[in-house]
Image (tube, rainbow, N blue to C red; front, side, top):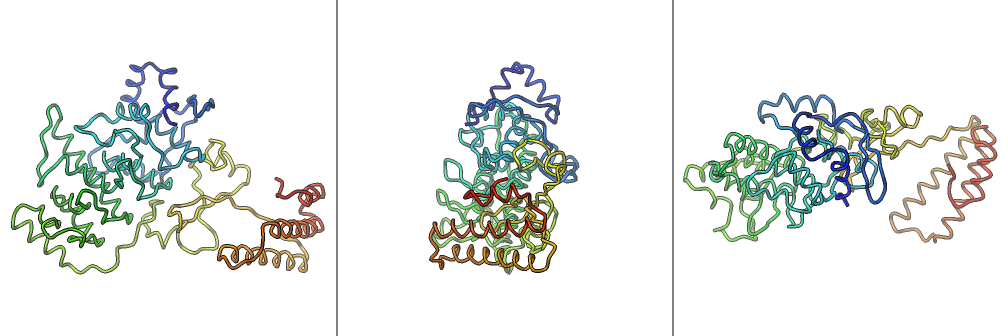
Length: 417
C-alpha cells in the first residue's frame, strides 16, 4: 500500500538531493507534494504536527533527552499524516518496505535495528527508536496502545526489548563504528517513550519467550522504568512462570535485588490516572472523557476531517461547519465529530413535537443497541420515512427548510444533503 507513496521522491528529487534536503531541513517544505496512492494522483499539502504548538516547542528544550530530529518533521510522515486524517489509512498502518527505506535514510541505522524490519508500525517505531514527538503525535491521532507487530509484540514490549539489546546490567553494549554518546542518548529516549507508554496504561504483563516488560527493564537495570512499571502494578512474579524466571532473577548483585524487593513492597493502590492523549496535562477523566454539554473544539491547525486535505481553520471552520472532539471509551481514542445543528422552530407546539420525535428516535436506537427491540429492518425504514416527513413538515412551516428540499427528503430512503 505505502510503497506507492515514495514514488514522488524519485520523480521529484534525485536520491542525493533528497538526502541533502533531509539533512538541511528540520521541517518539510510548505508546498504540495505529488503522490500516487492506490492508483490515484494526489497533491499533499504541508501540515503542522497534529499536536499543541507549545508541546512541539518543548521537544527542542527537553534537557532530559538530548535533541533528536523526529520523523514527524519529514516529508514522508507528512504524507502519512494526511492519509490518517482522511481515513485512507489508520494510525496502526504498516510501514511498507520502500517507505521503510526512506525512514532509514532519515533516522539512520543503529545496530541490529529490529524496528526497520518489514511490516513495522508507527508506535513501534517510536518506542524502539525513542522518537518522543512521534509517540505523542501517533497517539494523538488515535493509535491503539496494544497494536502488535508481525512478531506479536506490543509497542511497550518492543521498546523494552530494544533497551535490553543496547544495554545490559546498566552498561552499554559496544558496537563497532557506533558512537557511544549517540547510543547513550538513544537509550535515554527509548526509556522515556517506554515510561510514557506505561503512563498511558499500556498492558504491562504481556509475556513473550518467558519475559514481560518488567523482566526486560530489570535485565537492563533501567531503574526509572522499573519504578514506573511497579507503580502501575506490573507483576514482579507472574504465576505462569516458575520462581527461577521471576524478575528478580535477572538482577546480578544482592544490592540490586534488595533494591528491587524494597520497590515491590511499596503499597500501590489503583493505577495512576491516565494522562489525556491531547497532551493538555490533565487526566483523561478530567479532560476529553469528561461529561460536558459542549464537546472540546477541534484544533484549528489540525487537518480538516472532511477529507479536503486543508487545515480546519481554512476549511470547514471558515464555512461555519463545526467539528468537536470527545473521548471514545470503546475505541479508546479522541474521536472527531461533525456538529449537526437543526434550527428549532419558533412555535412552542412545533418545538415540543420535534423534541418528542428526537426522544423517540433515541429510545429506538437504545433498544436496538441493547438487543431488546423486535423492530425489523423494514420497520426501521418505514418509521424513519414517516418521522422524516413529519419533521420536514414542521421545518417547512417554521421557514427553516426549503419546500423543495423537504419534498426530496420525503421521497427517498436517506437524508439528502
